[in-house]
Amino acid sequence: MNTLYLIGTRALVIIICLGLAACNDRAEEKQTLAPVAFHQSDECHVCGMVIADFPGPKGEVVAKGSVKKFCSTAEMLGWWLQPENHLTEAKLYVHDMGKSAWEKPDDHYLIDATQAYYVVGTRLKGSMGVVLASFSEEAAARKLASEQGGRVLRFEDIDLTLLQQTPAL
Image (cartoon, rainbow, N blue to C red; front, side, top):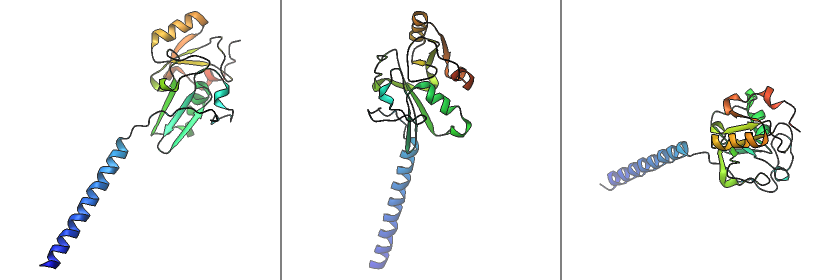
């Protein structure tokens, strides 16, 4: 009887452990890839410059187990548009400049880059290259475009040709 009891107990423990392990895998699968705060010492994944040294919105690509940070939205999108960089399990984030100061964007307002409105062609200064101001709301993007010049684009409108243009002076 004791042998039967031990075998049954061991089987039950194994089943419970396997069940818990399976639940843990499902929890990891459902895990969201949330944005990560920028720090004073962070360097741009593309150019290596210190991100905090520049005004304007920044970008980041968050994947399971890695975060790539960029000194501007244009740097991030230029990197992302390279076919070898399309990570299927990644989220792209940019600062919402409708809720942040241009000189020091607030990491509490990082938004999904694929849903953002972008203003290109302003006279605003960023890190280098084309400056893309990012917004969660179309009205805020249109307001900046009317005040600073430029035009409003969506994520799918941005391509490498646009990013290689000479910035407005």
